[in-house]
Image 1 (cartoon, rainbow, N blue to C red):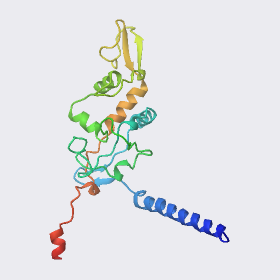
Image 2 (image 1 turned 45 degrees about the vertical axis):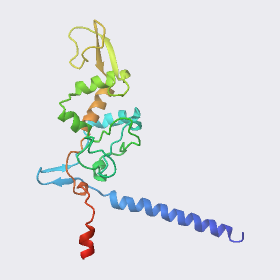
Image 3 (image 1 turned 180 degrees about the vertical axis):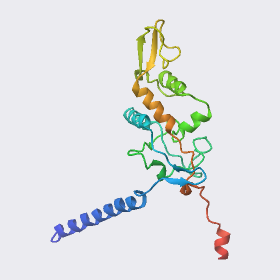
Image 4 (image 1 turned 60 degrees about the vertical axis):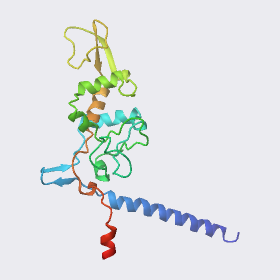
Length: 211
């Protein structure tokens, strides 16, 4: 082929330009998103993740929790997420602006966790109850007992000790990783309103025809 080098140069140039256009275009569209200030609540959303919850995000990632759980509520018509009680609105890009590595997930062996903190709060679940779920396993989730330490009682038991599970004379206490993970899970809330997350309403074909 006489023009082989020129052909491949043109091919790679076309691919490079397309790739750059995709990356730059998305960054231009989404990279500059800022929090939305809700005048009614006089607060900006989403809020930054607290320090201990930020540590919990790393534990969540290290344990591979995103292999079984998603953190993205789909809009009506693209699944039954809202009917399952996983959220009252769809997730949008602005929800993740403070997350350097959003744990969107790919499979739903377990429930979506985008609003786990909201659901736990509404159900009155305390951090101690969530820690117990981690130790014992819950609704098909395996037990993460390596996140807890069994130690011999020396005086009064720790205020953080789990109720039951340890033999007489011992107590089970969560490690710092367990506490950070629970703080992260309870911080997962997309219960605020965002303009771009308003319910999608398909165009009225009769009005369009009249126009």
